[in-house]
Amino acid sequence: MVTENVRQALREFVAERDWAQFHSSENLAKSIAIEAGELLECFQWEPDADTDRVREELADVLTYCLLLADRIGVDPDTIVLDKLEVTRRKYPVDRARGRSTKYDAL
Image 1 (cartoon, rainbow, N blue to C red):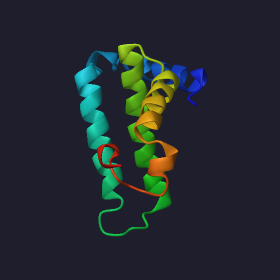
Image 2: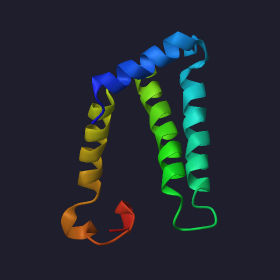
Image 3: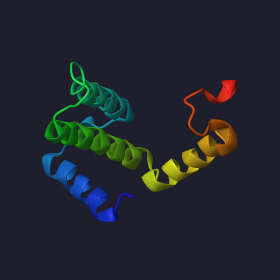
Image 4: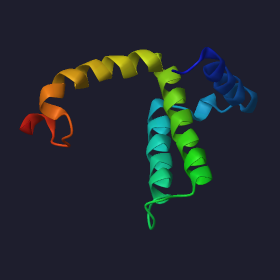
């Protein structure tokens, strides 16, 4: 999903600016939440948001997620696929298909 080129470009961007000193796990997690709020703000008054703005905010969320993954030493692809497997078991197709019901109420 995420290429090493993207991860390396982020590392270089941060290193060039000496920003790693500010990138504690806590600060990166806060930044993810802040940027996710900005993404949600795109849809605050209209269900159809400006695509360019959504792209920018989504890129910010993903950037901070990738920086946090790098900081804690996990591979984004691996953790997404691992979580998908857990979720797959919680939401079996025969009970969850076409439903938004939470897993414990299926």
